[in-house]
Image (cartoon, rainbow over all chains, first blue to last red):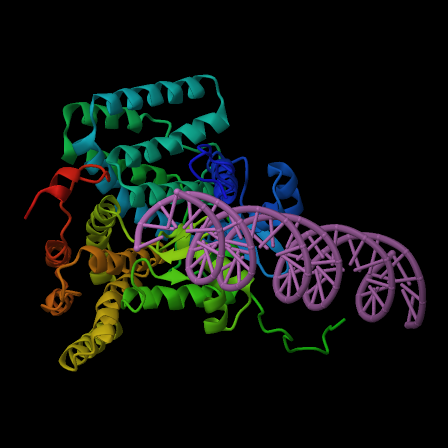
Length: 237
Length: 237
DNA sequence: GCGCTCTACATTGTTAACAATGCAAACGCA
DNA sequence: TGCGTTTGCATTGTTAACAATGTAGAGCGC
């Protein structure tokens, strides 16, 4: 068909970047809490919003469901997930297991350029906070953790952290103390200090403490399983 | 339509368990190396093998691709992934980060019943080894790690470990020393000992050592990026 | 009016036909 | 014979129609 005399790729790439793009966008909207748990994601609406066919929308929803960011109920549609208490505990347990290692690798591998990226990011975070730009602040707060995984330069960790950050946003929506929506108290800045000092142990323990602090603002009155606790449910208080 | 007088659910669940099933099966085949890297997964073949429609096959492949166990190339089809060196390093880095935490939680939470499950599993592993049942041995060796995540009772970790174990099988296929296909040297039994003693630190360090031992049998002659090393490629020897 | 049933509509799930692309074998030409 | 081209087939990608299910509202008996 087209040989040497056809140096230009015709289709460039129809590729399946389509659903990737949709997934990304929904992820972002979940992270900065523009999409709340329980929100229905109707196929028609998404088709219009992203200007893509129903097939791509359904495939995007399937990927999101496989990451437990979206729940698909047969014959009823797709909804932003509402994490159960068990799921919430699993997510933060996983974050406590993974993210200290992420930050360890990040400190080991960060170069001058990475430090600048971190600085710039923190400036933006502070700016968003000062301007009371809530969505932006939450988004940046989450993407700080993702930036660490990028500096660690590990694709598995990047993907994992992205998922866990998104789900954390949902957890905070459901169980979080009202108003408290992100790490406001500059733990992130302390972490940058640890980067500058190349102090791995410090960075790890800061991350550990940071995640526990987030967890402190979340109200998981943990029965071991997911059954409803009728006693506390009907006790006056 | 059907009200009180219809106490039985009609459809039981057409649900999307269809693609879940296909995903599971392919995962298993990858883990025990019946499916090797580069193997083409044609839609028609899978439709026949699992007796499902093309739609479900495509959706299953999409999920597998999102876990980087298969690679989908536009207009050419789906193939079992051939991990690059970078990807391989990422996978084992992630395992080293996650699995010690998994085993830590597992030891903390294991009850008598769990110990029995572990014992039974190890017996099967040994039996498979003694009978030179290679596929079975590899499968059990992988599912030991998954069993630990199940005992840890953390769904995120279960899903993560499943993915990492499957990808490890692919990595071993590509970069592993021939013949060495799994943890044969009873590190798993040592781990059970740590469970019995409820020695968390021991269990963590055993897991760490165990993963590093696997890594020792893998030949990642690591250039920092994935570009081909033409110098060594064309040097005699 | 209250509750139930039934009907009409909206949404999701599935299938099948069609379009586009890649691949391989046959052909032609030097 | 070797290389490039062409042509036909096999496979994947996309769309649109159809089937099935859920939902809301009207109708109706009590």
